Length: 214
Ligand code: AMP
Image (cartoon, protein in one colour):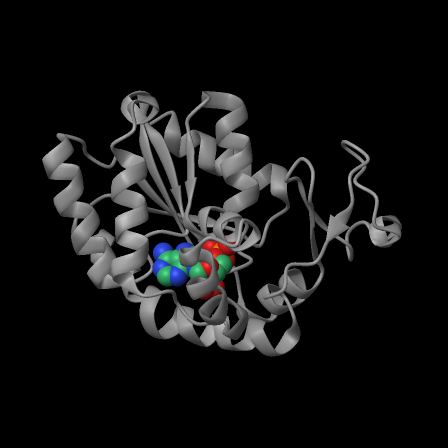
């Protein structure tokens, strides 16, 4: 099963990807996670990408397309994959289409998680991620986590550098301009399914899972 999660920053793609991994054991290809790891490791690519990420801008298409091509050619993706945060532009979507043809793969489902803009800003600025296990939390829903300790593993909860109000606003503008057109792009290909991402996490998962079960 080859799944793509589409949606604005903060729509819950990472949270739903974690549930898909738990249920179906598919490898998770998150370009944001790959780039954050490169930044943390201070690789040349990470140093280059950080300026764009801190400003809420997109990393150049050629860079992320190269990363995804490389990742999709690894054998663990033979059972399927979850694409999260890629593609983000029509150029990336076209490149992905070509790579999938080369690899003889097709997208099983493109799931668009739809959330209204006001909720996105609130969610992103309240997001905390565990530096140790990667679990994602919202400190509005769970204010006790403002103590900064992950309830799952005891690791430290961090706020992403790009989850500040200023950067979030730019990321949402970039999403509207560059990524939202992909909704029509995949609708025209007949693979797009919508899920109401304003519901609670469990209800979103029920909807996503029923799409995946076909
Ligand atoms: P995310 O974790 O998906 O919200 O991504 C965090 C940041 O990484 C984005 O704001 C971009 O700067 C960069 N990024 C992640 N995925 C892509 C992509 N497909 N194209 C360009 N930039 C990306």
